[in-house]
Image (cartoon, rainbow, N blue to C red; front, side, top):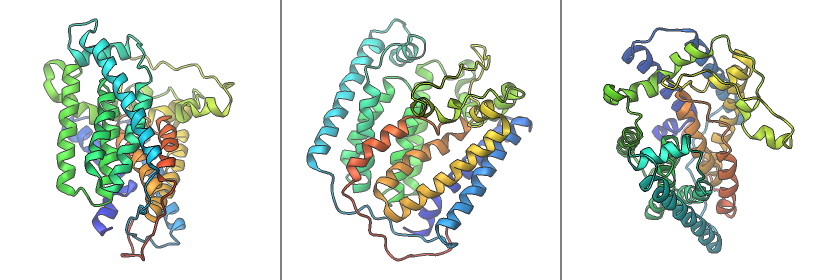
Amino acid sequence: MNKLRFYLTSPLVILVVIVALMFAMNLLVLGEQWQWGHNVFLLGICSFVIVYILASFMLCGGVFNIYSMEVGDADAPRLLVFCYWCLSFLGLVLSCYRIYRFGINGPLEGGVLFNLRYVYIWGHESNYGAQHFSLFALCLALYYAQKKRILLCIVASAIYLISALSLAERTSVLFLFVSVVYTLFYIGWVKLKGLLVFFALLVLIFCIIAVATGRAGGEKGFDFLYSYFGYAVTALSTWMDGQAGKGCADLILGKVVDILSLGLYSCVPFDVGFADDDFNVLTYASSPYLAGGVGAVIISMAVLGGWYACLRRLACLHGGYFLAMLSCYVYALVMVFYAWQFSLTTYVYVGLILLPLFYRQRSRPTEPELNQGL
């Protein structure tokens, strides 16, 4: 791995870049004022950065080594891969059926994606398990990305993309793009120019979904892109100040709390009180802040800083499974401007599905090429 890719694939660098762009959008483009929410947001980010750096030094013995990424030359068993493809195509069939039933023959006249979004958010219609089956396609895409078998990676990615579109869900589309493109860039198949092409395609898909689902800002045109990326930290100040300490651990840990407590733990959902036409994006800091105030934001982000440092180290040394998992978790860093995305059970499902694909792989790290990197 060359020095530039090593830096650009660092979770620390990705987080700092996203935060810098978010604040530039908030303060310069949107012209917002520095408020209480900006301080809370930055406290959490600083906590992550400090612990990440300290953990990296401890894991690397005080020196950051850059290794060539190796994924091993062993392939997953053919029967296993075949089963994964079958489950992926099952998810594709279910997604297409959902598009036909609720999109094309939907209850409203706003178009296919508008109907799909409506029945998903307000209609509470079943997705028939399509999203769970589509995770097998996502894992296949990550597997083939490391193998540099691009055609199969594209096919698997397309299956997952159709599943995301069956819900008209932009975050799932972003999850796919971030994880797969991160892997391709990490192993050197995609260059910087390629990243720009992927980014442009992603923005185009976002715009199509936003327009089709009536989320493009009405008469303001595509100004929603600025607000979507930059306004959330102001919204944090608007609705969160003084509402901390609700004690809901599942706001941070998600369904993991229910699993660990064997269903005994319960938490009454907390209603922030949005009006129907209010902006409801509150950044990553809202969930831990509601759970335990500013301290919960700092502690939770500190723990995550250590976790990402460990995962990054394992990815550099062993690639394979750990690189695939890091690629998925990078999505949560990209989404710090939007909401708390670290506790999604999707990571648990993906981690379990990926394990058999990479079980036979053995990493072969080379001698350090460069020193003094992060």
